[in-house]
Image (cartoon, rainbow, N blue to C red):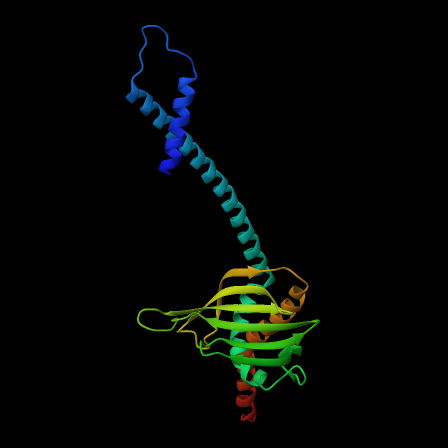
Length: 233
């Protein structure tokens, strides 16, 4: 920075010296010349900084629009909420998926063909499966050190979905300790790549969501049937 200022002042001094001799009776003050050069330097630097800020702001506005458009798509398509809930399914399905392989897939829910699964020491859990025309991997990744302790009512993580070996969706998720079933909830999108996997996943996740919505009503119907069966009129 200092070298740049020196070069700027030298260039400014050179420009002043080549401007021609001073009119008779007019003398120059070296301090005033130096001050004028410094002021010109600062003005130029601030103008450059303002231009950079304006350019960055335009980029930010473009990024905000991209995020808002993607969040709206995930919200209205059900993909955001659905993939977060699916992370709980990964947890409950993993033991069965670990017994499967590509050579010997096992049937899963709603037409899934489980081809594998596993977990790591960092509590990541995943399943791989065939659905429609693609091979998928869904992974639940609780964040390091994330747990229900002290005054923290939430546990945070990420849900990731890959299609044919390429990550196409990753979302930030959270759990609340008061949630009876510890369902993962959707927070925000981190990675999203459009493709022909979308209709397949919307179909699959919608079926899981319908199953969730019917769970308690079906329990109530079965309980009432059982109660009614013990009553003779």
